[in-house]
Image (cartoon, rainbow, N blue to C red):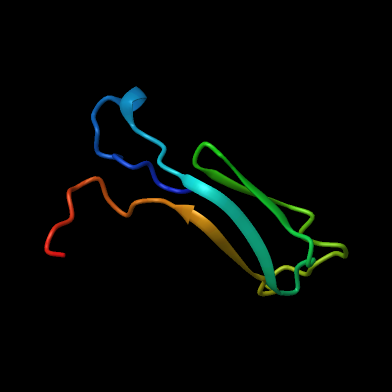
Length: 80
């Protein structure tokens, strides 16, 4: 799963920032193996040990990722 850059509209492509913080953790909700392993490599979430059997196309899989932050936009947020 790829997450957006923190400042995707920056015209300088090399200056676009990855902004993933925290210690991610994955948990299976439906179909997938209970001992999921996940980690971020830059903007990409990599999930491993997810299936122990073949899964048919169209099957709904569910898992939850917690323990990380990725801002929704680069603009300041105020009004709190």
